[in-house]
Image (cartoon, rainbow, N blue to C red):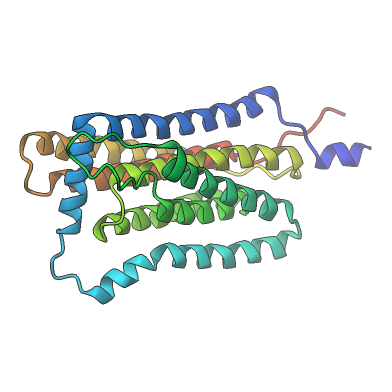
Length: 283
């Protein structure tokens, strides 16, 4: 009985609340992004301007290069699947894979429901109201694949996986801008939705997973958070410029900074929530 308790530590109330509160804040962030970007004239105008500037940023980009950018979410998914298979084989546990599969399904289902059923973009005379692209399915697919690997990774590897995952989701999100598939708000909202479901998935693994050895993950998480906050702060300058000078690519730069910042902050949140499950019950 002592062995069972050793391998199945119940999370503390604070740990469980941290996962739930983190998910609520991430989902709430996605809602806030949607409200500002879809229902306000300034939000719609900046979003549309960023899309046009990003699409025209590289006029010499060949069709082949654009096709390769389109394949980026699939590439991230394939690499993540291979990494997940290796991690599952090494740990001999299916729970992370099953939990990750649930995160993938719920994330993509949420994004598609929002895009096709729940969200109706008002026509403010700025964007084509009939063409709702919020949130981004491309980004959700890549971000969910990355989140699965993060949930399955060993405690010592999670911060490094979070950093690589942030780089992959940032590249995917910016690629959708360059190809004209999505606006910055579409990408940012998808990142937040996926991170919210991943936070809840992390709670499941905290309840069902074994005790882990302590690992120095706190400093990495704080570093990711500082980098993310710095990227968002750096994006304020081009955002201010875009509001005063419509040309010059400022809106696109601000959109890319927002994608990078949110990717890093979401990675920091998940890495922090997935701190090693090292709590041991009293004898």
